[in-house]
Image 1 (cartoon, one colour):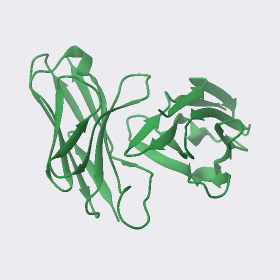
Image 2: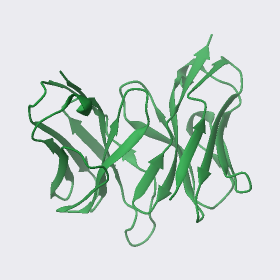
Image 3: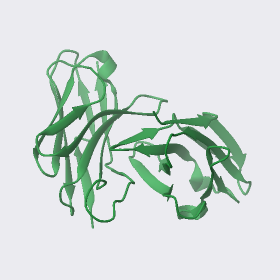
Length: 117
Length: 111
């Protein structure tokens, strides 16, 4: 069965510090990977998605970046955090677009709670 | 572009009462529609999905949703609420490699 991991679970960082959040998926190959941010009391905002190694699409201009160094690894980074970067960050995967049956539903990790102080 | 509107950011029901969470979508093509549930400080979990098969879709935990093309709606229902149903619920529509989520509806269940 497939599982998705995110770490750390919680993080408190000062303004201006760097950020690195990691997401890994097990039990599947060539997944599409996604980073979302959920601000308090709001819905999910798609930040980045990736359909393959080294392929990153950005949805929202910001001081965040994403990388996919391996097939099942997705990293969210920032060089200098802003207060507005606080939120709940969710990684997700799906397998749409592959040959054969596509499952359009997404599978989410447990999330990382980031507080920028 | 596709979009999703969830009517009511908060819904409160008594235990044992009907749960109705409303979702309307806009789409220029036949949509793939989803309901997800999120418990506090957790990721989202799929409740059910509509992918152009049966219009009445049954999901986990006794939830179901009906796709109504004429009303562009995909409302989520459960005949009898349980305390464990208290959570936030998100309606979503799929567009290519993107999934568009509604703003969410927080369900409160009163004893």
